[in-house]
Length: 243
Length: 285
Ligand SMILES: Nc1ncnc2c1ncn2[C@@H]1O[C@H](COP(=O)(O)OP(=O)(O)O)[C@@H](O)[C@H]1O
Ligand SMILES: [Mg+2]
Image 1: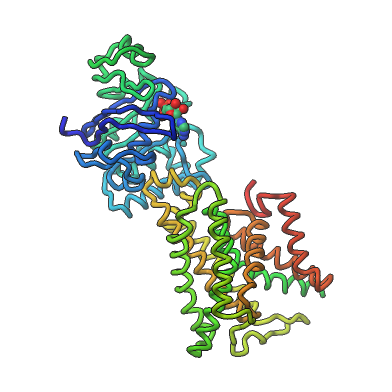
Image 2 (image 1 turned 135 degrees about the horizontal axis):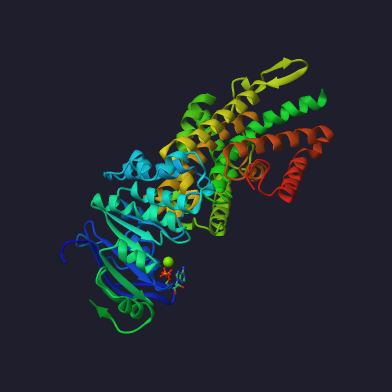
């Protein structure tokens, strides 16, 4: 596929002597939603961090629109149109909801990124963020914090949004509320990479999926047509399967 | 009356300490950089100011107008050339780097200005005072306090209301998350240190007006700034301001008890705060 907005080519990543990723080939098209599933420790977060420029990688291992951009610092990745909802939300504690979001508005403005997201549109998507505008983020519930983290990433006006386990630790009702925002995000033309532990959720919310096992891709295919058996084999071990 | 007088003089002294402490609150409280050369920078700027005054016949205001931009540039350079290489979660590398810088600056100043004490001629304002109800209040200390309030207020407003202020608070809270939001932490830090050292440009003028300065004097300024920040509570500029007031009052009251006890009284209050309320009097637990 030449129309990939973002792709990785033999992406490897290390933490000191420990190799966490062994040559990941990945791609995502415009407006596409791609799920990344796999057991704890499979390397999903490492993959997102490597793409985001938070881990050292060779420049030709990550491409955007064909251009090699691997290892670009995170702030420059934001400028190129990649934003992340990081594992653990990583909000700016001590600052209000409004100020957390404004940081993203400020920087998008500084970096000259234009897009369809504004504070008021975000408030329509997640009305609670308007009600809690002046509340310090650390006193929000987990779901509300996740909404701030998603909002902060959206206000960076991304063309590719990386989401790391946005459902983790949340009640089913809150998870539905958050996932209900996906269609509107994609309607913007934004591509979404969804790292998910919940396989059913990942399948229903994505067009295609990749399964990682111990730093390698063990399954790729359209989310609608991979079978339960294929997934469980890819998840826990077995040979590489392409559907 | 004697104690009330000590309180007033202490608050006025606190104004001077607040000017030392603000830059440190920004660097230590917000960026977690321990700048051991903080006091030496005050002395360096003071000596440069004194030389400017004598070479070009500048008055204190003109010296200030020249010194503050110079200090801003110096701070920016310090961060770009030295501190951005050592900044991180671990405060030790920045401590070691600035300790080296402190020694280098002291030697440099000795070479250029010798060990003599000098001061900035103030055209008489340094000795003017008014008497209110039996208490003498110096004009210069009142100006120092007023400038300290203005600087604290401006810095606080900048941190709360401006794009730069939000970026700096974000980077202080979680530097990696800040970079994921498009912030370039090193650029933000360079501006923050430029501001911190820029404030020392004001402090240097007042310091050399109200007393003398010599190349080896920086240690005291460093300690007072550090104590004010710790007493007040890290991460808040009004906390540092109030910490400076507490330190000034402690020293003034100590001085009334026994002239040799003044500085020590300040250290004792600092140690008491550190032992009983390590987050500072005005900091959040
Ligand atoms: N900072 C780190 N230092 C060393 N090893 C790490 C670090 N972060 C993750 N790892 C290791 O890398 C592997 C992949 O981790 P991660 O990408 O977090 O997995 P996942 O997100 O799929 O649960 C795991 O074995 C984990 O222990
Ligand atoms: Mg993870």
